Length: 328
Image 1 (cartoon, rainbow, N blue to C red):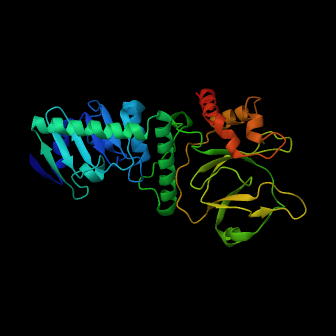
Image 2: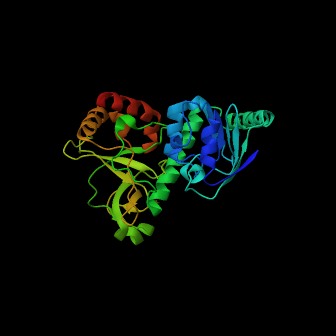
Image 3: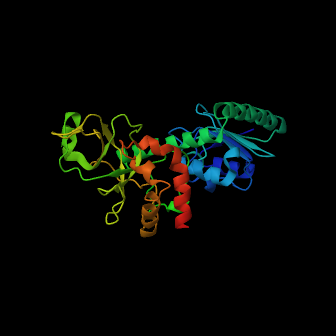
């Protein structure tokens, strides 16, 4: 057994050529520190310390079957055939790089101890499979983690800004609430009340939603404008709105009933972050064609009654699949 300090850990992990890994957190740059062709299984915590794009990259490499989630996981170890590394470093630049955080670990070459560590990995994996027995549960957890990271980035800025936005075809659909799709109309006569009055100077964009809708902060909304005949306005491009704040009973009309009293606000004093994907001309054309089709129009408009975003959740994944097919 050999003690490893910062600056020595990366070499030991590379020598280990880990096949099984259990770490609390995964960074976006995990591929720089291990041979992804050797890794067979990973157990990781899908909580705030893990970069959701890093986990998504792991899944793309290993498949959902071989990436396991355990919320309260805190141990970190890397198991290869001839050696293992056990200690404090997560699978990230901060944990493994020579210029990362101050970490400590041990390199194990005793085959009996490696076997013991392998048995412990199996125990952790079993706990993870009991916690998240279905792929859809893991996808929802990862979608929720994206939500946490987006809110954090809006508050203090993204740690790593990408020059170009993601393309629709590269967007991984994880759950039926990855983002919301909602129409808006002209609302010149709407007035405001309650807490939103204190935020009017900070409103960058807003969206009026039905009272009681199943929506939450930290989500993107793809907003598209509707005409009086309940068809997409072909002259107005859809756009993204990030929900920084939600205000209930905040909008009303003086002389008539107004159903969309909840106001979603994107604040002007928050840091910019990348939306789910870019709305290129081809993507917009396909969206308008698809949303106005007989297959989807009634769901995404709401028929004759009140429109609720929650009613679109059951068809969201199929809509995204059809949208991608039209763009490809």
